[in-house]
Length: 609
Image 1 (tube, rainbow, N blue to C red):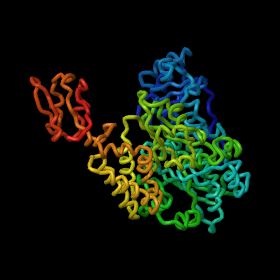
Image 2 (cartoon, rainbow, N blue to C red):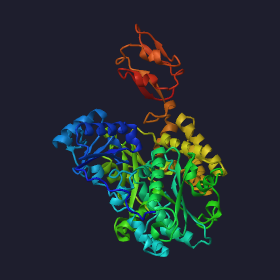
Image 3 (tube, rainbow, N blue to C red):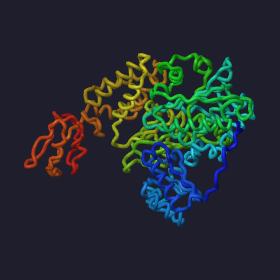
Image 4 (cartoon, rainbow, N blue to C red):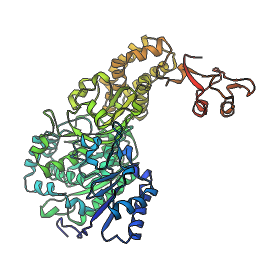
C-alpha cells in the first residue's frame, strides 16, 4: 500500500498537445484527431519531445473540437482531422502557429491565439473548473502534480468538527439548486446518532440543456472524489456513493478509473493516508428518472425501490439511506469543498457576494454565440454572462429572455439583464439558480411555447405520487396547449395562474413545487404574448403552428414542383404550367415544403385557416 505517492514519474516534454475529449468534442471526431496527432508526431520523429494527450471538457463547446498546445498556451478551434498535419508541420516543427485555426472575435474580426485573451475565458473566474481542459482526467499523477489531494491532507490535520466549521466559515451553499448552507448540512449529519453513516454525490443531472456535472466528472473527477473523502471524514461516514446517470457513460468510465487509482495510492480504503480513517466509494448508475435528482427519491433508487420522493421529516441527515444518517451534495459542491481546503477559506470568501460566496457554474446554451460551460463569481450580472462571456445573441438578433435553473426555473426579460446572479436575487424575481442551466431566447422564441415545452418535460417526469403535481401539471399543460392552438379565452389565464400557485403550495417535493415557475414568470413578464395568442389568434414568433398558415409567394415561386412532390398529405395543388397553392384545410404544418423550397417562396402568415 502506498501513501499518496505518484505511481510513476512523467517525462519532461518540450511540448504538450492536449486534445479535448469531453463528450461534445468526441461527437465531433476528437478521438480521430488525437490518433492523427499521434501518427504525425511519430512520423515526424519528435515523439520523444512532444507529448500527445487528452483532457476533459475545456468549456468552449461552440468552438470544438479544441486543441490546446503548451507551453505556448495556443488554442486551436473547430479543428478537423485534415488540419492536424498542418499544425504539426507548421506549429510543432517550424514554430509557426496556424492562424487560420485561431478563435475569431465576432466583434472585431481579430484572430486570437491565447485562450486567456478570448472574452469567453478572460471574463470568467475559473475556480472549480480550473483544471478542466488542462489535465488528463485519467492520470492521477497529473492531478497530484497540480496539488491534488493536498486539501484532503490538510483536512486530515484537523479534527472533523474543525473541518465542518471551516466549511461553515467559507459560506459554501449547495450547488445542486437549493442553496442550503453546506456546513450546516454536514454538521446535522455529524451530530446524528448512529455509527454507520453515508455520503452521497448527486450526479443525476437531467435538466434539458445542462451538462455541468457531466463535464466536471469527465474533466476533473479526482476533485469530486477528494471532496467526498473530506466530507466523509468530517461527518464520520466510511462509505460514499456517487449516483450518476447511466446516460453519462464517459463520466462513469472516468470516475471508475478515478476510484481504482485512488485505491491504489491509498486515498481510498483502509486507514486512508495513515489517518486511521476508512473510506470507500461505490458507483451507482441511475436509470434516467429526472425525479431521482430529489434526494429522497435518489436514495430510494439506490435501495432498489421505485424512485419517488418521501415526506420530510425525517430528513436524510438523521434517517437517510437504509435508515442511516446520510449527507447528499451535488458534484459541484463536493468539488468546491476540495478547492476550499486546497486554497483556503479566505480565498473562497473573497469571491462572490456576502450571502452567496464563491462562484456559480452554468451551461450557457440556446441562442447565444459562445455556448459552453462557464464559471463566474456569484453576483455577476446576466448581461455580463450573456453579452460579455456569451458574445451576444446568434445572428445579432434581439435578446428576448433568459431561462435560469433548468425546467423548473423562470424566464427573465431584457429589463432584468442587470440583475446579479445569486440565490436570493433570482428567487425574488420568480426564477431560481437551480443546478446551473441557462438557456437564452431570442426574438424568434415564443414564450408561451417555451413555457409549454418546460412544463411538458416536468409533467412527464413527475413520479405521480402526489395529486397536485400529477394532476395539476397535466391540467396546466392542457390549458397551455389550448392557448397555442387558439382555442382558449382570457379567463383561462386566471385559471392557469391560480392552478400554478396551488401546485407550488401543495406538491410533495421540489419537482412539483417549482414546475410552475416557467409559466408564472412568463405570465408576469410576457403576458401580452399569451393575450395575443388568445385574442388575436396570433403567434408573433410564428412558432405555434396552428396559429399561422403557409402560403406560396407567386413572385418568388419558380414552379419547380418540389413542394407538391414532398408534401406527405397532398395539400399542395397546381402544376408547373399554372401555379401552386397550399390548401390549409389539408396542411398538417409538417414544414417539409417550407424547409425544402429552393427559393424560400413559402412563407408563414399569421392567422388560422
